[in-house]
Image (tube, rainbow, N blue to C red; front, side, top):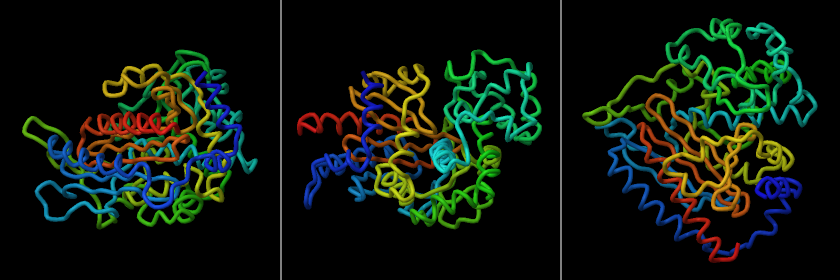
Length: 385
């Protein structure tokens, strides 16, 4: 039933879907929800002793509430503000899926193309297994490879070229397209296809097609771009004696599509609005439908501690997770990389979205987002939306 409802939503233009939403002049029906969330956000971050963070809640093309908390560096004087840049970690995958979908829509890529067409050095223990993996499998985490293949080498900061050469030791655990296996290294193989068919570097293409058109003025890609940003949040990890500041690590920046984007909460408000269909010249309705059509099941997600009371089903689309949350579709992604956590999510039915960024590794972010959507959908039920 959920798959049918998602596909039905996709068969209607996003513009038409949003025209069906109730339009309110002046104060939004979600004002109290937003105000209550701000109080909860500040309380939970203070209670968890997270150094700093930011959140935003949007409705259509309006910011309902944007809040910041704490400091860019624990014990420092500089406060987090709306333009403070954080690492997005795996929320970067939402941008990669979109860039690839843009090229598919333009006829420059096809989801059925084998990845070896763009990365001929990629091979597996049996070469025919490698040739069966296509771009859709790469972007949808359905390559058939063991989950998180060679993340251990990325953690050790091994060069990506050396890592690619080691895939010839692997045998898939299932056929491509059949089972879910979350990847960072293999996911980032999409970079080669995007660069070849766009004729731009990945960083330049994302700037040209997403950051600049959406006025995401502080967003960037890469390690050096982050360090060259003066208004940035520094990373902190949890220790027995509390949060401790650590150095920004360059390792996962090797995987730009998987974990290479940096952005502020202001930037993410614009990204959410675009994914809610407010910038069709950048993200067309057909692209949004493509990105959020459920692919492989991700049953492990149903066991997430803070989310399991509410999730009825979970799938991966193309760079986005697609949940059924108390019977309603919810589009979602999270990210976690040394010293940072991030989440972004939106409801195509309610036409609202929210995002959070923290500069301390804390599971409180999952608790906050699950409670937000619980309350949002409860309110929608009462309003008959």
